[in-house]
Amino acid sequence: MLLELGSHPFDITYRALVMGILNRTPDSFFDGGEYFDFDAFLRKAEGLVDDGADFLDVGGSKAGPGPEVTVAEEMDRVVPAVEALKARFDLPISVDTFRGSVARASYEAGACIGNDISGFADPEFLRAAVDHEASVVACHVRLAPRVPDPTPNYDDEGGVVNAVRNFCSTRAQWALDAGIPAQRIMVDAGLDLGKTPEMSAELLRHSDDLVSLGFPVFLSASNKGFLGELVETEVHDRREATVAAHCLGIGLGCRILRAHDVKGSRRAADVMAEFLEARATAIGAA
Image 1 (cartoon, rainbow, N blue to C red):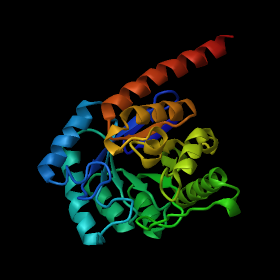
Image 2: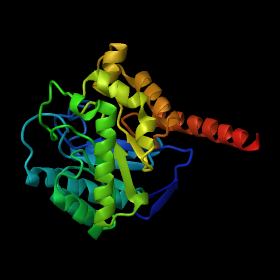
Image 3: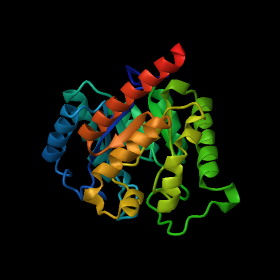
């Protein structure tokens, strides 16, 4: 399977890519704004690249509820960051936003991936991607980004796995219909976004159901709350749980890992690639 991120083609038949998370938000659930300062942000980016990130994801507004972030504020946080990263690294740059205007400005600054947790709710999002030949991520969310969803229910949709699969299938088709090639479209189950911990765990266990759609599957499990529920740990003590989730996801076909701990995720992905290729070779020789 081939994935195109800007001018960078990646063979993801066995090897999962690792996306390094870069938050320019003062209220990130994980780092709490530790890298909001621009110099700290750039130092963090250098560390992620040194640790083996295949590409970087810049976000200026967190996914969960919080103080309002205006379009102007988000652009001020994201666009200069994209420009700086593009000038420093020969890596694809992703922008984590649900606003088409922010995505467009980021593409003009050098980004080549739009990571949209709203599932293309803004019609401008896909138009901007087409105009700039960008790749996109269609992520499932039940209500909308930044909207509290304390009692999610998917009974009317045949359960959470079926609901997420149908949503991602529809959104991927929207991207195809807009003119984005299949090799530039990724899908994401949106773990913890409008899901209980049990639902997120169920989605992870059934990642192969999403893989069956035929698009590269993006796994956003890093340090998420559902892992904390499983192992009863706080947010900064979920490293091993995250690596375990990444290995399970890769084994079930996920090929993009959105990670805080790039070094650990990179090592896990490389080991899994060796196992998967050796297994495929043995099966082919049998």
